[in-house]
Image (cartoon, rainbow, N blue to C red; front, side, top):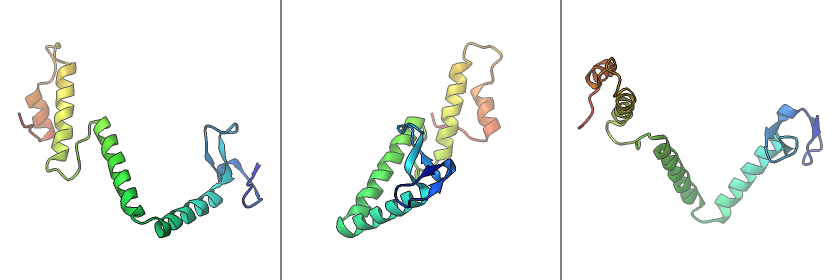
Length: 119
């Protein structure tokens, strides 16, 4: 049991978000108070900072694009996104089993997945 300094109520550990930097491994402020704080902070920034939403949306889009690139997932909105993912799977499979004479061929994988890759 911990006491939230904002609302001064004693709550269980499940009522606090995780925080690895804290000695107890939990935030000092409860989830409810944290939500209220985040919401008021967001609304104050929207009101006081011109172009805040546009900057935030651009940052989030750039962040997600960077994460997708790191994971090897192609950009959204491009025709054949799923095909790109499948082609990466086929190439990886082919490289891993290149020396094995019994391995599945690329053509078999393409037929099995119902897609063909651009060469």
